[in-house]
Image 1 (cartoon, chains in turn yellow, cyan):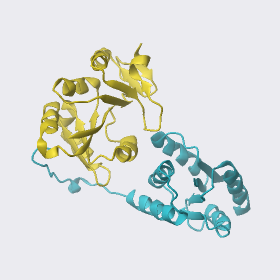
Image 2 (tube, each protein chain N blue to C red):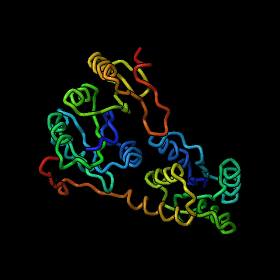
Image 3 (cartoon, each protein chain N blue to C red):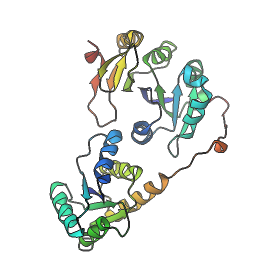
Image 4 (cartoon, helix red, strand yellow):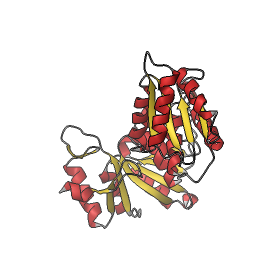
Amino acid sequence: MKIVLARIDDRLIHGQVATVWSKVTGCQRIIVCDDDVAQDKIRSTLLKQVAPAGIKSHVVDLEKAVRVYENPKYADDKCLLLFTNPTSVLYMVEHGVPITSVNIGGMSFKEGKHQITGAVSVDDKDIEAFKKLNEKGIELEIRKVDTDAKVMLMDVLK
Amino acid sequence: MFGIIVGTHGIFATELVKSCEMIMGEQKNVKAVTLIPGEGPDDVVKKYEAAIQELDCEDGVLFLNDLFGGSPYNASTRLVINNERYGVVTGVSLPMLIAMAGEQLAYGGADIKELMEKAVAAGKDGIQTFHASAIVDDEEEEL
């Protein structure tokens, strides 16, 4: 699998992803990697309906996501990986998936989170995961769409 | 570069450009022109001319109007008839505008007729339906 983009966006497949990111990355598949979403039959069914033309979308749990990454059947496929949170990204990295850069597009505000930019809110668990990803030398950049200037997450976390 | 002018009845155009910016980010070479109650095609022609002055229209202007035969459309045609690098497409929608904003980003000199065809295709492709009966589970072996 060729990872053309790893993005954290808890809206998953929506306007920015369906129209902008799928085009600029030239991905063939959009893979939502999330344990909760994979268990949610309705949400995962609906996500599979909204793939842009010519692109297949999938919803898998993290264990399966690692397996799919390792499967030689998909070795040449250009994939856009979508996550709802950095802890899931860290799981993939710790299981040998070579993610070198993470684009953070949107993490919505909820009780117990604090807002660090207009589109990104984090809690302690998120911060912990981001710190670990950062220690591994993985770029953490905030951008809604590709034409936005990159804002480095670690700079706004401080 | 070609300029995009969205011309509609009421503030639909202004809001449609804002909606497009929610998805695509700021649009520098797109202008909204509105026809407000009491105005006629002459007023709209003036607004179009002012918009063209403000935009980079070296390679042409693409007018996206809401309604075929409406005043914003009729005003566009008055300008388009005198310039081969101008064109109009009606039935403007968010998918159509997003597609054309995308064409600006990746602009490589396509002529106006080609852009018009792409706008029409994007508008048509933007119309989809969904009903529970349409769900098919075509799970591949792994993915």
